[in-house]
Structures are given as C-alpha cells and as structure tokens.
Length: 411
Image 1 (tube, rainbow, N blue to C red):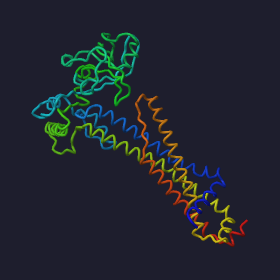
Image 2: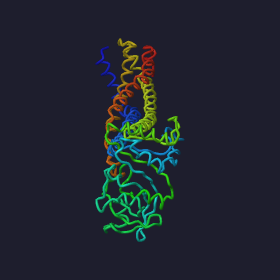
Image 3: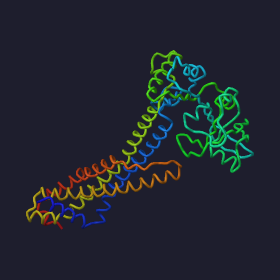
Image 4: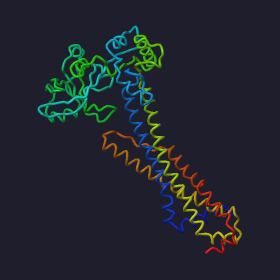
C-alpha cells in the first residue's frame, strides 16, 4: 500500500473518534508546552542577568572574601573576614597591580531608616566616591560624597528613589536628616529611579564605607573590593596580579586554598550561565515526565483502538492488506497524534511564555525579555514524534499479527 493511502486511512481512523484523539494528545501538549515555557523563562532570566552584568562594565573586577563557591557548603565562606585594610593597601599599590585604574572597598549593612516617625527597611552600602563611576550611577539631585567624607567618616548619605518617596514623599530630601540604626545621617543626594537591577538602587542608601564600618557594623573587614582595570585587554592581567598579591600577603602557595576569590564580569556571566543551565535541565527533566506519561496514555488508547477495530483489521486483511500495511497504519496513527500534540504544545508554549514575560515585567518591575527557545521547540517536537514511534509500536504490532479469520469472527 502506498504511503498516501496509509496516511489517508490513518487520518480517517483518528477522525472517527475526535474527542478521544484530543484527550489522547493532551499529555503530549502539556509536556511540550511545559518544556517551551521553562526554557523560555529561564533563558529570558539568564539574558536579563547577563545584560545587567555587562552593564556594570567589562573592565570591572570584584574581589570577594572566602573561597570561590563551587558547592552548597562553600557559600558559608563568603562571610569570612579575609579582606581588610592591608589587602586594600596591597591591591592599590601600583608595584603590585600596575594595570589598576581605580578601586573602592564595599560593605553592606541591613538597616532601619527613620524620618519623622516613618520607617523603611533597606540596606546601606558603604563604598567610595568612585563607585558612581564604576556602576555609572549618579545622583539626579544633590551630589555624591567625596574622599574627604570617607576620611572624616562623615555621616552623609545618598538615597534611592523608593527610599525618598517612602520617607519624604513629594518634599525635598536634600539636607534633611534621617536616622539609620539610631544614628543621624544627612542626605546629600538622591539617585534617579532605575527599577530592578542586580541590586535595587531604588531601595538603597549609599554612604562612606568608613562610616558604615565604624558606626553601623563595628567591623574592620570588607564584603568586597571593586577594581577597574585600565583597559579591557588588561583585565586578565589585573586579575592575575591581584590573585598573586593576595596569595603572597596571606602566605598561600596552593590556589585551591585561597581565602578569597577574584571575579571578572566574564566570570560572573559564565557562572550565571552554568547555574541557569543546570536549573533549566532539572526543570525540563521534570516537565519531560509528562511526555512519558503522555506516551503511555497513547499506547493504552491505541490498544483500546486496536481491540475496537478488530473486525476492521480482519476485513482489510481479507481484502489483501498485509501485516506490514496494518503495522504502518496504526503506527502512523500514533505518530500523527504525537506530532499534532507537539505542534499544539509549541504554539501554546510560545503564547504562555510571552504572557509570562509580560506578567514578570509587570509584577517584578524587571524588563524581562521574551525568548522563544528554538532548540527546545525542535527537541520537543522531535521527542514527541519519537514517543509516537516507541509507544505506538507495540499496539501496531499487535494489530498486524491478528489472524484475519479470528478478527472477522470478533464481536
């Protein structure tokens, strides 16, 4: 029997029971749709984070305390106190890091902000004046603090737009004093509204790191040191020089025993890519279970169909159809079901992914990009067709092996 005749017969068989055919492919539709949604959302999130990392500047290097996290047990290391003033002095020494352009230490302190009875829970970032240049974030009103403010441990602060709105409303915040963890800080600047980024500038208070260390934290160590290389070409050399300087300072000969880690923007992007790929693989694996369930459902329904159409099989064999013809017909029916389910799943997945990206933009304030994962669509479509072949083979083979005499006698 020619393929077009087999195809027409298989299509007619599916049309006979439209509602059952629709229910049969539901598992395939949900499986493919879930894979598309998971891959689209995770890829969109990855692209968003990578874009924000790149926006910090390709010349920016972060030196952080503790061993580089490579597993769940390593994340406790990031709270170590391996970065202090002597590390800052060693890094800024041109003899040690000749390609360094500028740098700033950083400390972070959770804080309660109070102004005339109104309170706001936020974070205070202690840093230096060069921070605004490194992150390209400048006050829209007022000004940033100076190196003199850092040396004098001045109680001055620049606040984010959300902090300003919550505490001061429409009134001018410049020159006003607010209490941060019980200490008065004079507001000298307000950042423009930027929305959600890697850290929410709108809810941030930025003050001299010396002030935050002494008056808010009571510590002598830093949470990070931001470094900017003179050029993109010298980023790799700058990173190596910092690592060699800190290892010599800490008496470390084995890099695996580092009590710090140095990360460029390329390193950060690679780390984000690895994390999102792992999470995507896990979520896709979970979503793929529904494809397996759908395949089992198709096999069961096809077995029921074979039983119901026993007389039809006997009649076709009596008219000259071979076992191979019967096998092709029922196998093609199973493949058609899964292919149709795959196509519907791809379309539904794209639609829900687009709706999801819009919802995330609205709810979270992120400019979440919509990404249609072509590779996931191709894999989902291919897997759905493969499931039709695998799970349709047993019912099709059972139908082809029926005796025509026994089949004609079946009631």
